[in-house]
Image (tube, rainbow, N blue to C red; front, top):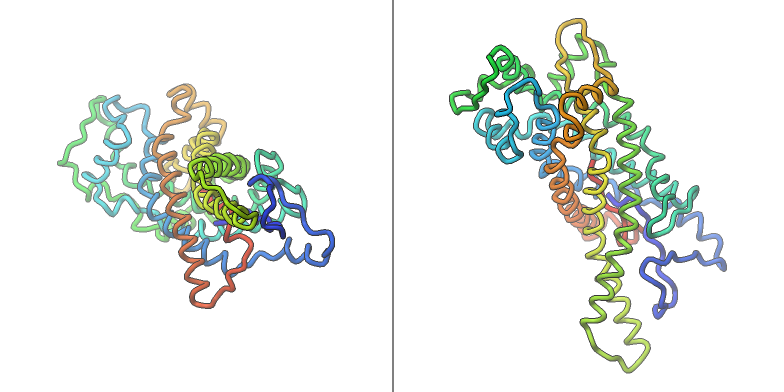
Length: 393
């Protein structure tokens, strides 16, 4: 979802301002400023954010499953069980079936649509009206993004908890069986999908079963570490996005101008070409910046995500449970796996960040175009041209 309000274009089309130079509001018309700051066009953005959330989640969920399995691999098992991402994906398909790739996809489909809608509203509001962040590498963009993290955490903690429980559900019995063996682990086709079906038939069944046994608070297992991860992720994402966007726009704009080599007889023609060049640069820079920002943010916050997965992926059964906290999880990861344990699964996550960012931009822009074609939107929303796009969480 677009999380950044696009700055208004200068009245003079021949302006030579840098592509990343912030545009100042027109002081001669002060009545327009409050309307521009608070005009969020929620209907259009909500439709675009919903489409982006659905498409991105469906495409990226198998990689998210691989990431979660790698983050929580049992260190007590044989080294033979430590599979690479592709080997692990093949093993899942062979022993659990294709449907297992989307086990637990329901909660993310719902929550990411909500979070994408909230994220652009929160970021845009705080950036414009409180922190006054500018384009480029500005720490105030990070602060603006982090302001919504407590609200995001309330939505994403139950989603992440149910998703992680479902993604690990199929392997709980398998891990119990492995621990009973002498240490030799062999993954063979004889292990049928039925044996690895798990306890829960779906996300709703998982939620109902766990809530009935442990109360509603069980859904907020790992809430603190998840909220800290959300704050770190969205802050880094918006900081990097604004910075990468400017860098890519400069590079693409410069390359296009140098490759053009055409001289114009009038300033009007030159101004027109400059606008076209800037528009072309923005159309390429935005998805590239979104993908790079997502990958950078995941790399930066991945140890926190490993801790979250360890806390939320604990087997929960029976009437009494001992919840392992984030610090205990960190200590265990460090003692058993070392620093590499904090980055187990980072490869699939970065690949997923690029895949999801690109697909979400396409879905988002397609939904906005459909809204404008059908007359549901005037097409004058200020986020359509240069927004941050949906971030990948």
